[in-house]
Length: 302
Image 1 (cartoon, rainbow, N blue to C red):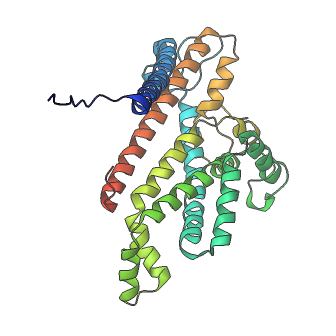
Image 2: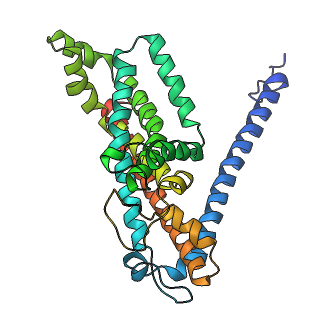
Image 3: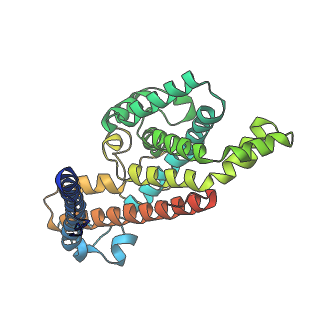
């Protein structure tokens, strides 16, 4: 009597499933590698064209006269810092308060509506936001505050804040949803009110995730150009920290220099683009670090 041969090799439908799974896995790996290659080519292309203009003067001096070599983008760097700082000061509290309302206090119907409108705002073209802020602040409104009727860093910061708001709010909502309910229930059991529980228990626990969303929103806002064309495009070539004045910015400098006929400005445009890419990369890595730290704090290991 012969003993039947047992084999673990897949046959029939199981074999077809394994083949399809392998093809899908290879396709996914190829897509991921393609994205990395495209990013690498883009970074190398920008860096190779702008490396010649990167020096100390590039970060510490203003633009050179037409036809002259040297110069830098110090006014644009300072202007971008001012714009992003204003946008963060405006967007962060409003975004966090919106997330707290939706996650902790709002009825489900209201919460769903707020999420819908935030997602809609996140999909708005940035140039439309720029036109809206131009009409609201630059053209005619808020003259009593001394910031209406002309372009200013405040107007540009408000436009960037509108872009940042849905990103900050939605990321904060996701983090607040990850806070274990046991922490809330333990606080309620000790007689702490709901608002004090949010401020003293929920927010400190989710602070890392909120900072992660804010950091990503800053990276998004720092590279926006269209809103600044309407709100903060006409500025002097001097370093200016005054938010009521119109200031230069790195994205607008790249746009302006790329349209110039001066080869020196072309090189500086590539260098400024490389600086912006490095800023976004560092900001994204910082956000990733904060996210991992927040997950470890909440006990959510991946």
